Length: 298
Image 1 (cartoon, one colour):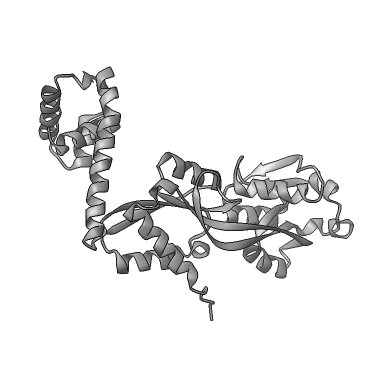
Image 2: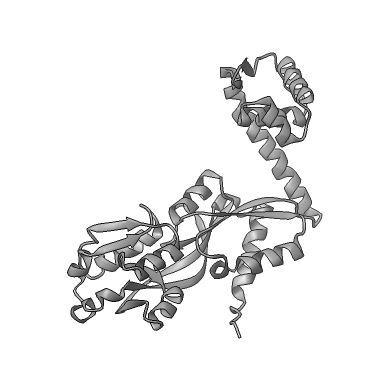
């Protein structure tokens, strides 16, 4: 038994089909089939049941798959640590993003990573805030940007404070005089999906004024969409201050005076992975980028 056989076993289990697995491994289908057969003979158990729909794990295969993945992960960690010891960092990181790349300074981060660790691959996945922390916990993300309260059961590096403003359609300007939060709660509000940090900011804005949250909400999971819906008169929302000031100055939306909600932008990661050379390198790069002042446009 060798590591290539284990890698083939995992690939076939993941894809459920020899053809797709062979393509992912850049192997011919006969070669892949031969590796699976050799592994089954070595172990003395059948790993897959061949069916017209593809390759189906047997009960024995299901039991051994988890251990095979653990072995391959351990091998990858071993190689990564060895690379780190000799000063060559090689590997792949999946990083979650929750706001636009400019706000997260992703371009600066990737430029610095390419310069310092040319063999390190960083794959970006745009997610909403609750998916960010869930992905870090389940391992689908190695780390993620996140805004809101400090994430539970995760380590996090605080990067910057963010201010959100209460933005409303121009037609609601008459609401500004009364500043009645109970009345405002009866209007439509645009919020991000359930459990998102954006929705929690809306709830907190009303809770801090001892007012019930909005009764009628419309979901949108993108900041530009939220701003557009406010401009179109669909409803009110909380909007990041740097996105709200320009349309407010141009008379496309109105901002509720002195209504601000402050939060924090973080880089979140599993504490157990802080010493992983790849995650450690990412944390170092992010700290360096965010220790520098933001460059202002001329």
